[in-house]
Length: 431
Image (cartoon, rainbow, N blue to C red; front, side, top):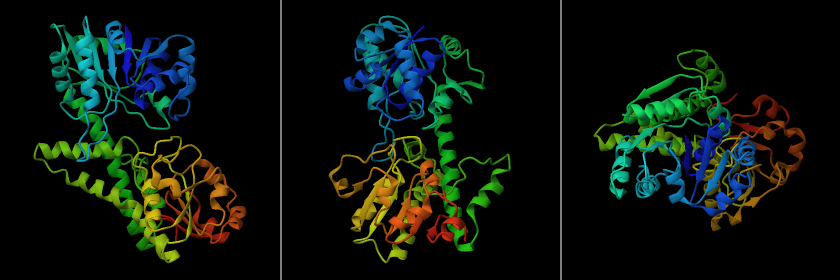
């Protein structure tokens, strides 16, 4: 079987890599000629540890190719994975225009049976809609199947997750499709779930929404910990040892961001409302996350007597380490608020960059953490990049105008920071 990947973003590039790695012939298709040119040279257009090397390896071997010729690509490939974006619309629902366009392109160009597999995160019922789009675009009736095969990749850990998945979920109502996908994934040893398309689609949303719920729960609890003078890290450790709870996603901080959790929780809430069901817990999760960043800002504002004219260092821009993804990143919200209150913002992130919006021209983007600290009256740590933990904070203190440290990720040791002369404030941290 020859595999076509439509969309060469984070999910598409990773999916292309993993199928090439296990021995299949793979082609990546994208309408963005610039992306395709870079990928043909074995270069990525985003940051993901280890993925570029894997892409380059399989481009060199010719097992992985890239094209902008969608008509030829669709004709020549047996299995087509849809890995295009499904961003949120203003009301929180998923924008399916790219999925719809890909489906119509397939319908117009296919000349024989195709298995179309949705990797993109899509609302429940999208598999049925894709069938309709393809059938409506066909010039003559040609058989095809559409299956759901959601991805469970962590940004910053995509290569590891793709090569060693914790489960494979397949949603299909076709035995032929099931057998083809089992053959494609036959080299993986992990639990399989073969179910209906709607169930597979909902598994992805339910998984991400539950993880987002754990994050927002701990962020709420951290506020109580501050009032009770209790260390939220120790609370998380005590909770995480219970196997029914587990230790992952119990870290309090500024809130979640990225390409998945914000849009997936919002879409699940929108789906529930369309079916006259109120998911009140998830509505609370969204609200907690929307306002979480203000908790630390309020403490910083009180400490400084306002932000106007103050030099504020923001360390970290990406929503998490090992990625350049700034979608829904708490740091962006913090910077926006600081600029609104006329602060002088000094920013450093080792990988991620600010959007090209004119409003960010006032931000001093620095080439090192030390440069960003110079003359600062407060530090706000937004991303737990390892190099921030390795920085000589005793030496760095000499660069500051005032040693105020607001740790939005509870990354550093509170007692040590206070011992070398910092005013240190975390979120539900040590007292």
